Length: 327
Image 1 (cartoon, rainbow, N blue to C red):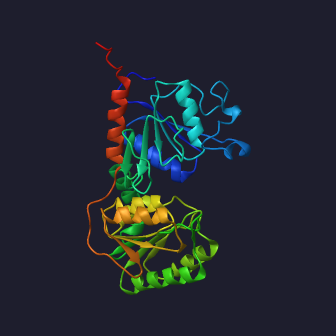
Image 2: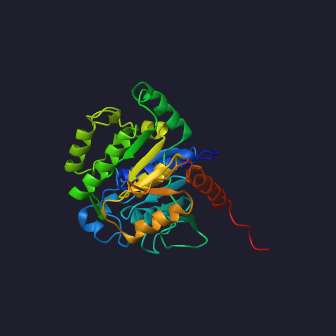
């Protein structure tokens, strides 16, 4: 444990970027000394998670364990596979302040603080509720990306429209009809004089990626080719408007953190939880539906990262103070 005001923080996940990056963003906002700890249980043990035990190969006493000491001041964990490991960490190091993000789907998580989004159900004295997930969109990182890509993006005509493309997921599929609907809307944006800045993801289906690459043959488009540094942050920093696909709540949350008009494209499928997320988001930040229901006008950015970090630090400081003895 460290005695100075900057805590040592573990970020405990199974390494998925969608889980790990928000926790890194929290740790950065806390100005913490951050250590990544990634869990990789064998498949048989994942079947029983989050309720079951950790993989015995990862016992804290084992060399190379993600739970090996020295233990941190604070642990930020998220994901189903991380829950048993957080529980084990708390047993091994009761003085570690354990924070769990997202609904763990079990009361046996042993976290000192639970952070959930509004569309999740847990509530209580040890629960913080946020509309959007934390992120790494600090002013410094956005400013650095803005400058790094100025030569490529400044020549684009305004308005510059950032297009954040996800892909197929557990609840969404991009059908041929979806792709045509998306492309029709993007062509209309170009025809109206807008420029497009397009980035895809590892989940983007090949047919959609090919259609977007073909679109990028038109003038006034900057599209990430997947081979160089991802200009995601630069695209956000230069955006006058953002179009984002509904399959990633993290991406939607990052879009509304900029403060420019945001439209969500809905591929086939969906889930009531995502609908609840967008409904809760819409109460605080007006979002449109691309390409049929545009929105206009900027809005104050919606970004809970700094406030969540402040709350964690406040609760950690209180956690460190031993309770007064009974009189």
